[in-house]
Image (tube, rainbow, N blue to C red):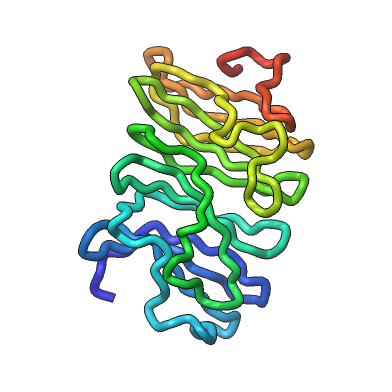
Length: 219
């Protein structure tokens, strides 16, 4: 208590309880913190009062999201800007409280952008994970999508930094996403390419390429 806290997310712990994630301002910036609560409403054994810091405030965390994978791990994706803006992902095994260096093994999905928007996540048909986000660099905003295999590595054929779904000089919102059941997904977003906001959608195939049957810049 006593510190500014915001942006809560909750993931299942596989035992009737959950792990609560949130952003909390410490002396240097917004930190990413977590706490496990049992189905009886008490703190889980091994988790300290007040929770644990997953990413310190010195990393200036901007946003985060959580998704359970096929093995019961919680996959956490977050953006931060300690020097350059990055989007990273790491898995959390909920059985015990994570160590202080939990984020050291994170996979970097994007780096160097001036701004990275909130990431959207969904389970892929192979038990992996689909992650979509917007990023702005050099006056252009792109929507990106990557499929990660179980374990966190990019799926075969997918660029490590994601497939570019659309690239525009206009403002693009964070994408909504629907897995297509074949390893790909349909993405929808708000697009400011005209004088008013409009909704566009695009399909990315399971091999990481944009569907050639859909209009290049979305429909």
